[in-house]
Figure 1 (cartoon, rainbow, N blue to C red):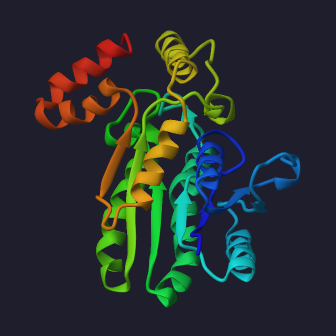
Figure 2 (figure 1 turned 120 degrees about the vertical axis):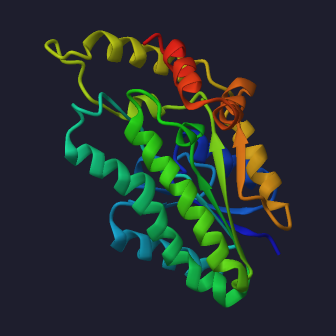
Length: 267
């Protein structure tokens, strides 16, 4: 019997690539979108879900369970980017980003856990980011929200051990998706003291995404995790130097690593 996979944020980017790849491998795949009616050509069914609206989460999970009677794998992929000087990002945007990148995934997990506990099996894969391992300039809120999800996953894993439910993180680096178009950009203000450094860093970030890897690489790692009996706590996928930056953070003195980041972003 084919495994049932639910992917949040499945209408575009990494989520879409994961869904198409797993469907081709014989999985029963459902994706989610805030506006599924806008994606009539999706290769797999899309269910309405906005991770910031808890009532839509329950409805989505129930719809999939009514059709399939189980959810074997949840891929918590829905997320949002945010950039800007920390001093200038409006509080409402900071809170909105955490609602999407942290509280939303937690609430989806809460909604799917009762059925996984009942079936005594299940796998939850939280898509985080390599950016979540370090505080990046002008991406500090994004780094913080993704890093928080990494830590929540570590705690959740231990709490779920006795139920037969596994959980892991997958942290991608830069991949060629539409995330730059969808992220919140604090405006580059003419009178801002950060005008030049933020503007230059924004150009660098967008260039990294445009030249990023094929999101199918992420899908291949997802399949590997699904086929692993006891998944690790953390997985990373991306260019070598992006993954190696996490190792450097562990072994280098803080100020040396900080200088490397500042040189990279030309600060």
